[in-house]
Length: 464
Image (cartoon, rainbow, N blue to C red):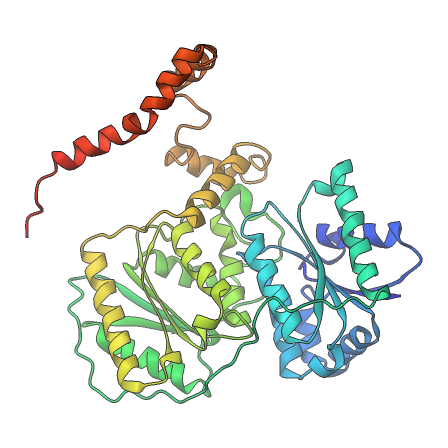
């Protein structure tokens, strides 16, 4: 059978994801494989209609589409994101419908689930059935267990095609309800009390609803809100994945475009509004390029302490995965998501009020210095990076290690709480004694809650 490998890495031949796919080709040489470096060559693919069409033709002739991609900011690289947009813009679903798709990613498991959810969604939206997926750690294939998983992944893909297996759709199709928002009331400007505000958006001239949202938001902040259109600043290209920034946070694009200038501007803000139109289950590839390029900041909360507002044009409530990414971005940045608004409400008066409330909430949260809640989105992400930077990635990301040490990001890791270490050493032998074990079990819940009962009892009413 024929397998079309869609390589989503900007590194091309030097991609780890590509070599995972090539491992499959070596293990199962009875099949025919083609490779397409869509992320690395997206600029030329977008310029050259014939080049794009040749890739689509090859995908149309293939039995299996194998998406092989690394993780970039909780999703795929901006180059692969743009290629996906091109597939929809050229209405290729009729050519790809019914094909078997496989998802193969490499990462350190930071939000690989959201990347896989996205790629599954777009595969299903294009009419393909995702028969197998493998979210691999970058080093998995170097171990026997990882190679066994790769073999199982490949065999599952091949069997799905040869057996004509029906692959059920797991994500519901998106049902947009397009309408043109236009404000019908005058916004009452909110006193920002000296707070600095920036609004960043990616609106095209035809994005009338998004432009109207941005305009109302800008008018709703008393004083000047700095408004920037991502499509009007220079971005020389997408992240190259070269990791040269790991040593000193310097990017190979520095001095060649305006990304760093905008990034540094946002660091000075108190309130940041991110406004964008939804494109195939995410924001635009332009937004993705901006986030990918921010990688030179390292695995640190470079926008810590801000108030975020997400203002989106599109069916946000239908894409739980996108909402997860937006909220996780806030938690990983240690910034509070004060509001998350979309125009899908379909009523101008209602949207006017939602946007006004978003501004009011953002300003109020900034004045009160509201911090983000810590859910598993942020806690797990920070612990994952903490372990990686302390260990296997320290040499590569020296700038991160320096930041973690100077800002206490390692916390008590490795464990230096001697009382806890002593307890963990002494308690297990004691708990082998039946009476001691029973006494602990009888009192465990009481002991756990006792300090909270005491705290609540001693709490004083807040001052109004």
